[in-house]
Length: 292
Length: 292
Image (cartoon, rainbow over all chains, first blue to last red):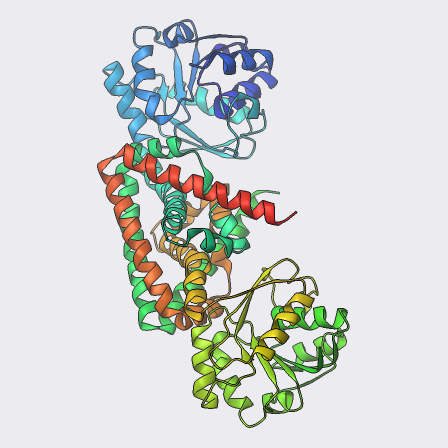
């Protein structure tokens, strides 16, 4: 499907895409681009990419498919470095977990949104990072959301859809606003809760003792608080608007719940907890149905 | 260690204690007490208890060790039903996850706190409930917190400590206020966050779609929202004071975090997330050290 694929940012996300397309025999050549020499040399050694450069302009010149897997905070400078090196038919997509900010960064850097640009977000990942953590099956049965812009060409959209289908993913298309709201609700907000819970306990005087009595559920519940702080800073800044709205909504709900607890309003509490349990059980049931 | 043990409430918690003490050959006779005939007959069949009654007064008469494993919401009536049936040397302990309310219920029902009463809380459990879910190793290497009152005799405290040591648990003693605060922070608050997150999403218009895009972390994070709503209503009502305070503190922290996100204050966000990650990683490291 591509003569030359350029992967900008060769880590778990970019490396896994390269491996999947290569395994499927769908690309002739893969060039990697990034800052860390050691990581890029490892990527070549592992056969994930054929060659590398530190120069984004060089990487995209002559590539017909470009995948941006750099942190959200590095998107602006990456688009800027691509300027003047893209041809009319180049298809560009990315893996950023907020989409409004990536589109803005692209428009600001290039002056317009190229018809070949298909903003995307594969909802996949593991606790590990770096190219050695990448594997071709990462996207198998995972969801990928594409948020084409008004400028996106039908052909570019089809190419990116095909690319993800080859990786075994389920592809959905939605508006950028909707993507950013859905992700704020299901991923960004939960991370905020876990980070602030752990931080809130860590700031208590007797925090060592507090953590000592944390039971098994606490470990699961706070797992996502061990995520990469820089990545999450970038996501919060990038998706500030939708996430702020979701936080506002959630703080209201917590405030009402706190009031019911203070008053000892058992009926209200039972109603909230029963509704939540039913929703969560339904979610798990549906999730299990999807994964055979 | 006991001639006759009375288990009031023969489910996962009560049943597992009975099994552990029986397996250690430390009790001669075990009488179970509860409302559900079917469950109690199953308990006899499984050899967890020797006999049963629905009458709490009968169960405690002639028992030298009593374990209350009824829901927090049923403690008051259980103590009331014990009145007039306790002898001076009867040792009474319980498994309630809030301690102030149990002590209040005891005092209100009996007019005073018996010297044989040792309020306790084994921090153990599984996702399952009922006597068929009980097993003798449930308390192995788990923490048990005892919160003796001013009336608790040294002898009664020693008996209950011995009882839990026989089950393989690590026993700590602390004040009731401190217990209720520590548990509000490490267990009750996280449950509130999970319940209200799921409820908050379930109340959104497009909730089916929202849940569809929830990734792997969401499942772990919300697991505790599938807990028993009645039990959690009881815990919230019982530990209303300490939990309200913890909620207030948490809502303040979330409000500050929301403000940093709204302003896109990357430095502040990075500081919070880094501190949380460090605390969580430290917690996991210590928890791993404890479990060989």
